[in-house]
Image (tube, rainbow, N blue to C red; front, side, top):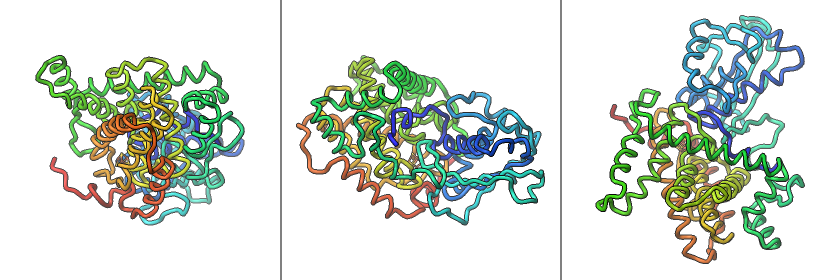
Length: 460
Ligand code: SF4
C-alpha cells in the first residue's frame, strides 16, 4: 500500500480526524458494506465505542460524526453549517435516515454506547457496529462489525493492514519507499530532487492533471480555513469557555504591519495566528484538512501560508512543499503512528512539524539532505510529547500547540539550511524513536484525558 497525497491530506471536518472523520467514514462504511439486501431489513443500529473514543468521543464530536455517517454523509462533502440542525432533529424525532434510504428508530442516549472499561486488542480507537432486524434490538444482530480509527481519518477492520504495516513497497509507483533512506537512495540514483520523485509517484497513481488539481484544492481549503478563522469571533463549543483569539491577533498584526516599532520576532505571530485560525475552525467543527490529523491540522497550512506570504513561494513551490510534506507524514504513519491515541501528541503535532519543515525546505530550494535534516530536527524536538486535551476537547493545549509546532518547523528548516545536510540522527531514527517512546507511554497520556494537562483545573 502506497500512502499518497490523497491519503494524507483528507478534506473533512473538525474537530478530530481519529474521533470525527474516521468514525463518520466507519459508520457509513458499515452500512454500505452490509450484505446485499440487508439494509432493507434493518430496524435499529447501535454502536459501542471503546478506548479513547469512549473517553473523549463526546468532546471530539464522535457521536455527531457517527450519526452523520449513518445518514450516508462523507466528511469532505457534508454541509458543516447544517450539522447542528440535523443532529437536533434526530434527537427530537428519535429517527435516523440510514444512508438517506431508510428511516429507523434511533435514540442517541442508548444507541451510542461508551464502553469505558474494555479495550479491544488491536487499537484503542475501536467501534463495534451492530444492525438489528427488530426495533427493540432484543434479537441477535443481523450484522456486527468492528472498525478501528487509526488516526488521520484512516479506518481499518481486523483483516486490513494495520498501524505500522502499510508500506510503500509495491510496484504501483516508480519509486516505492518505506524509509527516508530508501527515498534518498532513489534520489541519488536518479540525480533528482525528492519532490520530482514524489511527483512521479503521484502522477503514476492518478495522472498529472488530477494530482495538480488535488493539490490546488488542498491549498484552497487550507487558506480558506485560515481566512475563516481570522474572520470569526466568539466562543468555541464544548463548555470550556475558550474564546477565539485569531481575529484579535490578526487585527493587531495588521495594524502593526509596516510600523517600525514592530519587533522582528513578531513575524512569528503571523505564523502562530495562521495555525490558531485553523485550529479554532477545527475545534468549532469547520472544514479542515488532515495534515496529518485534524488535531494537528494547523501546522502545515500555517507554514505553507508563511512560505507564500513571507518567502514569496509561488504555485509550483507550494506543490513541492505539499509533495514532500506528505511523504514525511507517510513515513511517520508507516513506521510509527500519527495517532495521539497510539503515541501521544508527538505523533500528531510532531509529525506535522516534521512535514512542514521538510515542505518548507523543499519550497526554499534546499538539497535532499537538508530537507531530511529539517524534518528530523522538527520531529526530534517533539519526541515524548503527550496527548492530554482538557475535557477531551481539541482546544487546550491543542490550538497553541499547533502554533508552537509551526514556529519550530520554521526554525528547523532554517537551521537545516545553514548546514550542508550532514547530521548524526536520521529522520528514520527519529521516527523509530517516536514509535518506541509511544509504546512506552502510559495510556493516560494517549488521548484519554486522564493525565497530564487534562487534569489541570480550568478557570472559566
Ligand atoms: S494534545 Fe495533540 S494529539 Fe492530543 S488531541 Fe491535542 S493536538 Fe491531538
